[in-house]
Length: 355
Image 1 (cartoon, rainbow, N blue to C red):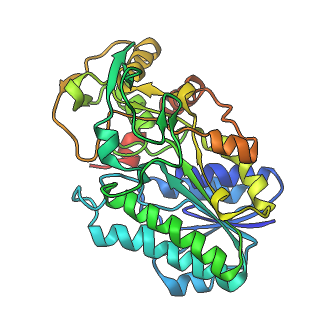
Image 2: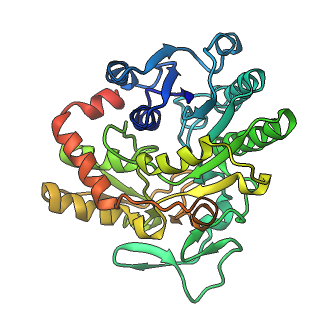
């Protein structure tokens, strides 16, 4: 099958491209190469026979001349919850990239009757009930308070697809939620298959780590390099929790989606995550780093960070029901993969997060 991947030289795009070409698909991708470090992925992908083009999905004219494909996998995004408000990018740049870029890709799919798979995010879920979630600390990590009444759509297994998506969800979350709705509407209106995969925190070897995205890669690389680290907010204890998923674990479900099964619209959107079994706090990540690399101090700083929440784990029960999908890569395996990469690439933080 002919597959076109947006953002192919990012961490997720490049990882999926390698897996799909290994499975026998004809893979082409494009990137605008504005993300520091992304250029390093071009040559390794080309050596595998993957055609890598330079194009910007914000430019409709550049999308119009892309080669034909049977399916598009959208792995391009400014993937930070702080995007548009942190001074790195403007709010207009964020919307242009994450939302108007989606429109351009959907127009490509409409013109060529190509299927579309959107890699979305856990940050489409409402911040207010998550920020106010009653939690207790145990083993250096928050968890939902079992004695408290939890918001609808949230259990100890995680946040499911029925959880609120009302504002505020951050500008980043809003662009992804709007992209989801547009994708499903385009598919219905113009009769091409669309799937929305809401992903938990994606992590693995070669990820470009920053504190606001790629937290597992950032923390491990910074620990190894003796970079300053802080536990921000929530009492400065590092108890906030996220789940963890390796992109390779998405490959089995992508193969099933590429077959474009006839599903009702309600079943074309699902969570994909490592789930509760993968969940880890920053403090627990530090404990792992200490065992792997040796001890070092982390500053306790209770200063809050905009849009931060104490605990978010996605419940992937719907994906398991529809697709018989389960994550298979343990968090410890993901962390060790990142650690080995960090040891082999001593300047990785400087490459991916230049100052």
